[in-house]
Image 1 (cartoon, rainbow, N blue to C red):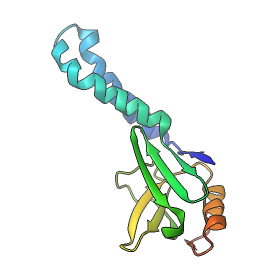
Image 2: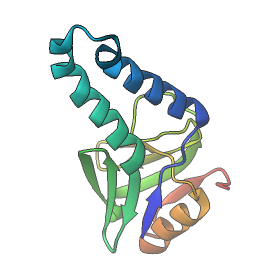
Image 3: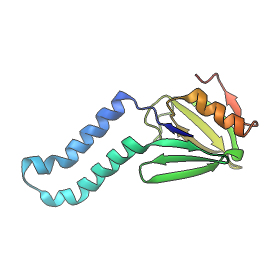
Image 4: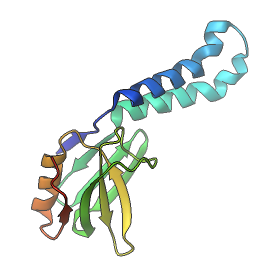
Length: 136
């Protein structure tokens, strides 16, 4: 099952301002060699905006953010809790879930639109997951 990322308004604003800034040399008619660096950056930002999401299958949680994919075994997930941690992550909202997994207590931040359904699905696959706080 696929869960798209929740997107805050400020994220849209920041990304689109950056994309416009990347493409500014086209509009002002100079420094076209800068476009060699800025057009790929603009493409990556737009790609991340429209493809950030989380796919849950029988044994894997796949976190996708643009071209970047991370796979986590659901059986390795230890804990899920609500957080507003602003660290850079595959989450386009500050309303996030912190997923703790692995033997070294690694952490991922995600922001699925439907946090309750996302958490319930993971918990149905691995009943050992500890859910901290009531996730709405």
